[in-house]
Amino acid sequence: MDAQLKPDLTPLGPRSALEPDSQLRALNRLASALEARVPGSAGHARRVAFYASGVARRMGFSRERVARLHRAAALHDIGKVGTPAAIVNKPGPLSDEEFAVVRRHAAIGAWMVAGLGDDELVAVVRHHHERLDGNGYPDGLAGGEIPLGARIVAVADTFDAVASTRPYRAAKRCREALELLDGEAGAQLDPGVVSAFRDYFAGLPAAAAADRRGREIGQVAFNG
Ligand SMILES: [Fe+2]
Image 1 (cartoon, rainbow, N blue to C red):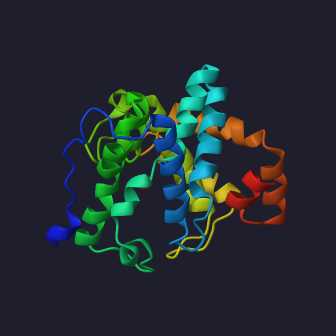
Image 2 (cartoon, helix red, strand yellow):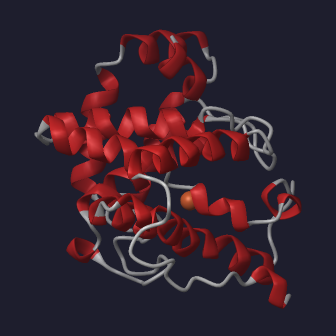
């Protein structure tokens, strides 16, 4: 792999010069700017945050934990700033080497948000691509070793990625996306979270209406 694609992830020190609130605003703007690189991905992070916080509410999280998960979910892919646009936008399947570059975004993202001073947020960003069966990345955590917030973001992220158009795939409809979540329950995804997502999603009126019309549910459920 090109050595230039390996970022230096040594800690920045106790805190960067910016206060956490200022860092959060800057990081959110960066997350939006990053989405502009990929056709069809605009609003992905905001939708994942919307879904993840809705599921967390359904699972009985306190208001404060819901708000913190919303913040974490909105920044889950911030580490893609380290992924070249040519790889992010590649229309065909990735080579092993390219996929290795993509996988680095989880650790890079965790490094980027460390200055916000919220360990749970850092853990969600780092572990949102772990799989329940232990075959995910970056640490190969399995089952309950994966922080619950990261398991929730994984379900929301998978749903929105499937339900929205990407360079390599047309959008699938809501029902197919939900069926895909069911198929991954117990392997990639936490079955309890998938079940909570289904309950939560069924309660979104815009989602049901959009599915009847066969529109792209990822956009419609969030934007109305
Ligand atoms: Fe990701």
